[in-house]
Image 1: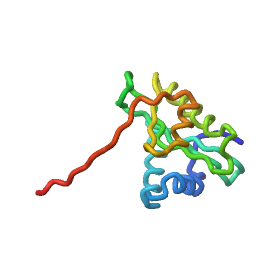
Image 2: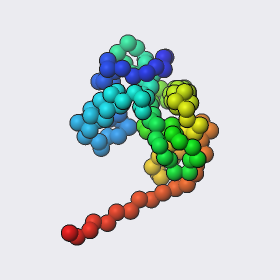
Image 3: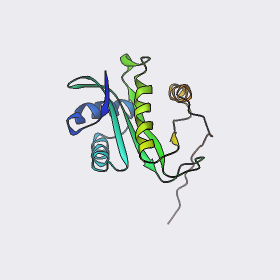
Length: 148
């Protein structure tokens, strides 16, 4: 299987994979975010696992961020989203996607790569740790509505 940059011809499959990773996100949001990434290659890179000419098996969206908590340089390469189809897991494809993103970030002048995951996403946590990422902290967000 081939790891490569995503292109316009991958939109349907990329959308399918994104919907699996983020099932609660509306399709319209997925579609607009995909276009935003394709339209800004200076700050975003998307890598895909090509199974066949018209079928993808995974994707990784990476970006450059000017600031990331617990990082000491700028910009920082950031793993925004990362998914491999269930039937293709445990074959090293996720690691290959991450490696491609790290190489891209390094070529953009980054000295650090960062990522995040939900507190209860143990699969993601284990995957990050297995690829050499170190947990730097845990964060819980709070919100309060203010009366006008």
